[in-house]
Image 1 (cartoon, rainbow, N blue to C red):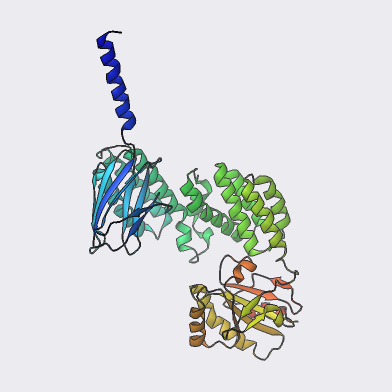
Image 2: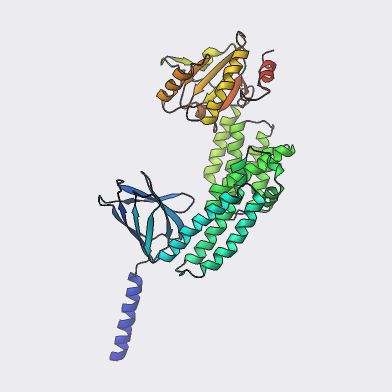
Length: 443
């Protein structure tokens, strides 16, 4: 082999070695003035999934280097305050500087300096549009369409390095997520069926297959279908929701998550539509994930033990003096039981109504009113009792919700005098029909 050929091979090998050794890591260095945190949390995407912990030196400096894989819009968060939007793109080196004494002031320099500045302005503009148009779904939808055209035109002036495709994907996701969750922000103000524009959008929306959509949007998507179905007076609610997931959610992984949402909601609310067995049998065929299938079998077995007519699951709890007793000690009367916590605002909002309800049935020996706190902090419960001085029985059992498969509080339950379940989802004290409801079960 001649010398020229050897030189060419050597150069090629050196070139390949250089390419192989070239860093494809994402590198972030930083200097945080007035920082007292010892670490920061790096989140993998703008959905808030925690990815890594970054150590911060006493002088506020740090260095992070890692191969990210899929590029994402992310953020760095400090425990004592400070959230900084970041772009995570492999093969780029970036530097973050911030003075924590002046919140909101920071700068990203390096390979993604222009892209970071562009994204930062986008977040401000997007938030402004949302706030200005949030009272009208139709107006918000139109404003997003106009903004999308305008911002994508400006995007062409930003160096790419993989940022353009990432921004387009993120923008689509941000618009879709805000529009899908629109009703969730305003629910309770008016029936969902009143907004024809929103309903039309939800009928046609494609959630896509991203993990973000699955975790953030799917619950709202199904909640809307549930509420809309209830307003229309349809029966077989949960079988309907299973059909929604099966027919409208195309990604297999998202489908499995959708089925879990449907089952969880039914298990927590009880068999109000008399369809639990049919839903379970159909669900058993639809669920292909082994872990979810095992969970379904276990939860359904527990669910059947909590149906009307089943014996009330007994438990031990304690009163404000620390004295232990059992729920079964109260059998012999109809029991109206309130599951609550001091940290739950809706729970506390029901207390004045419960006071009036107790007063209405004062002297009626057929009914017992009971509140059980699920506060983790027992002292907070004691402090609340000391302030309110309630005149009905009060107990504390922080894991009571697990025993009765309660996912949302406040929850009100009704047990008959023989210790059997009447319902685990009784009307609240604020419900106009609560007195008639109780009197109907005291005859």
